[in-house]
Each structure stands twice: as C-alpha cells, then as structure tokens.
Amino acid sequence: MPLLNMGIAGGLLDPSDAQVDNRRLGDGLVRAFVRAGGTLAPSEAVVKIECDGDVAVAVRTPFGTHHGDAILLTAGAWSGAIDMPPQALPPVVPVKGQMLSLVPPSRDLLPSPLVWGNWIYLVPLTDRLHVGATTELIGIDTRVTEGARISLLENARGLMPTLGDWEVEEQWAGLRPGSPDDLPILGETAMKALFVATGQYRNGILFAPVIAEVMSRLILSGEIADGLRSFDPKRFVTG
Image: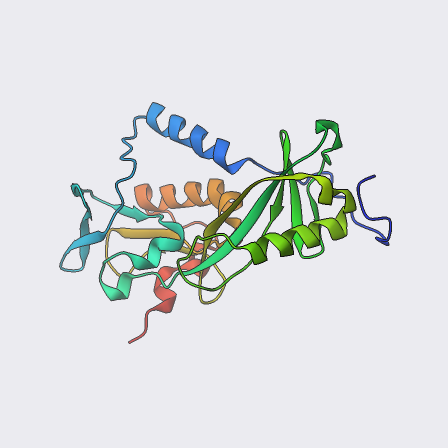
C-alpha cells in the first residue's frame, strides 16, 4: 500500500473484504423490483399506517391510500416518524453521517482495497475515493458542514498524506437508523399484519440480502428464522 503513511506500524489485510456502490445498487434493485412485477410509487412518502382495531390494513400517503394484507415498514431513519399506534412505533433514532468523495490526479493512484484506520474508512469506487464517515446524534438533519469536511480530510491525510492534493468532488450527509440497544428491529409489531425491518445502523446495505430473505419468509409463510426473535420489535413494548 504505497500511499499509506510511512509512520504506520502495521496493518491487517483481509482479502475477502469488499465494497458496493450503494447508488448503483439502488438503481439496480429498482429495475429488478419492477421486472419482478412490483409497482413502485417514487416520491410518494408514507405518512400514516391505517388500522382496523389491532390490525394494520393500509398505508396513507399525500396522494392516496394503499391497502394490503400485510405491510412492511422499511423507512430507515424515518421509521419512527410515521403516524401509527404508539405500541407499534419502532424507537428508531436517526444518526447523521457525512462523507466526502475525492478525485485522484491519476486514476491509477486509487488504492485497491478498502482501508480502515484513523477513525475513518477509505472506499475506492471506479474513479474516486469515498471518505467516511462522521457520527452525529442531532436528529433529522442532512446539512453538510465545514467542520465535518475538515475532520474527514485531516483523518484521511493521516492515513494517506498525498490525499491532501486530491480534489474534493462531493460532500453529502445521510441518516442511519439506530435503535436503543444497537440491534436491528425485525419482525411483526404489536399491530397484526404490520411488520418492520429497520434499526441496522451502519450496516443496512450489508444486511439487506439476508433481511429480505428472512422477512419474506416470515410474512409469506410465518417461518421464523433462527435468531430472529432476538430482534423482535415487541421487545421495546412495556405495560
């Protein structure tokens, strides 16, 4: 790793480590979903879960109401901000994270593996290097700040000094879904027919394939995967 700071005493190489471009993955999942027969309503945010007694029956958006035999809430950091009975509301806490995208003077300078260290990670993606990420408990706030930019760049230069000469192409912020016990929230809520999959914090994109598998089995056939009870949404319900 020729770019690494020569003062670093040592490191650990994991040849099985990998990364994914979440934006490209999102586009690919949309196409796969539509090809499989799904109906996507972009920019139509759910604002309320409609219930009949203790059974969830529909979701309401600013444009209409959609009925279903089962409802799966996967709203990430916004999962706890939707109007629904309080006993079913997942106690999700939004955790802000800011990142940078750096462009190298020459593409062949990009490091090949993902690099962790100095309280950050460096992710090479095609023709740029992503630097992340901050952790901020300040509610639903996606503004970018100069302080985060400076901190990320300083830590990145601590790992690879020449990154100070790379161009900052982009800075952005996102929200991660945290939970009170730092564990995912997966399963049927206190409302019948209302399921939730959230609370994965920084690992949502990594857990997504297995969560999709266990949640689909739970909803379609009632099969409870090994270990799923540990993440039961009802563990937070009292009284």
